[in-house]
Amino acid sequence: MTDTLKPRDAKEVEDAVRWALDGDRALEIVGGGSKRSLGRPSQTDVTLDLSGLSGVTLYEPEELVLSARAGTSLIEIVELLAARNQQLAFEPVDCGAIFGAIAGQGTVGGALASNLCGPRRFKAGAARDHFLGFSAVSGRGEGFKSGGRVVKNVTGYDLAKLMAGSWGTLAVLTDVTLKTLPKAETEETVLLLAQPDAEAIRAMAAATNSTCDVSAAAHLPPAVAPRTPGHVHRTAVTAFRLEGVAPSVTHRRVTLEALLRRFGALDLLAEHDSRAFWRAVRDCEPFASTGAAERPLWRLSVPPSWGAQAAAAIVEGAGAQVFYDWAGGLIWVETLPSHDAGASAVHRAAAVAGGHATLVRAPAAVRAVVDVFPPQPGALAALTKRVKESFDPKGVLNPGRMWAGM
Image (cartoon, rainbow, N blue to C red):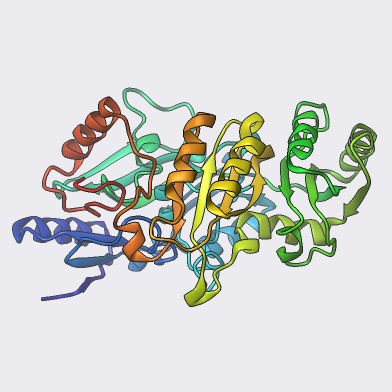
């Protein structure tokens, strides 16, 4: 039996899915493989490798739109956009550091299927908000399309939003279309030093609600800040990114510094160091994998005002280390190794805060017995099951990756 299928075009993807249907086989959908260890352990027979579906098929810089085959490297797309002073504003996460793997292996299809995004999330939106359209193959072996090449083109169901974050469980993306945006001319980062978590959350709220147009806000406690590549302070730091043309950045920095001085001492990262710092925050480099002794890693999304309280509960209940992104709305949590990766404390804190948690990194044996993705209440679970059955009635595509039995 063939262990890996590597289609070269959408037609061969259809053939592969139909072959799997005919033989009652389950397919593991893989692009670059950078997120392969995120989710419940694979319950599949054959790997469908989409890396052969590569290449940009359309790029119109003036229209701020790009189309590419799903297996296209994100590095290729980022470099193409940079040459025209454009970017993917949702800052797709590179999971290399998290899993102790080679950086730069992510694909555009994987970025959209996972809906993972970086520090600009609260300003620019998630990956799904930049996902204009796609071509795909359902679990029925049928090719279909949705969306197009402009933002306001949706009639009926906006299936791009449904595919984003579905982790390949509904359909195999073969070609995707995204919105691009101009890249900032320069950036600077204002650092607020030595603040406890709760005070840092208040400072981030003040900054993001000001006229300074902050594009990223993060807080690294003292145990975590020194682990951030390129960072020199040995104390807690709360960071605020300003992007744009140089005169605007300078003006807003002065205003932001005046706002933050009442909280404590300040420092500044110039453009080069600022880009390195936010790349490290985006890719969770403070909690980079250490190999066999790696600690479980969670990604907790909560209302920003609840960030410090939720993190404190997890630190106390699971012996964790944390840092905050999205102005306190995203908490990266590294727990001590255990039979459940600290799941009880993490899910309890998320529920109290009205948020949810995803287990990003843990041994396969742990991921097989705990809720990797947020557990769903009965009505929502039933709806999710019906959607899965509509697109993939025989469970051919990534079965069980998100929830057991689905």
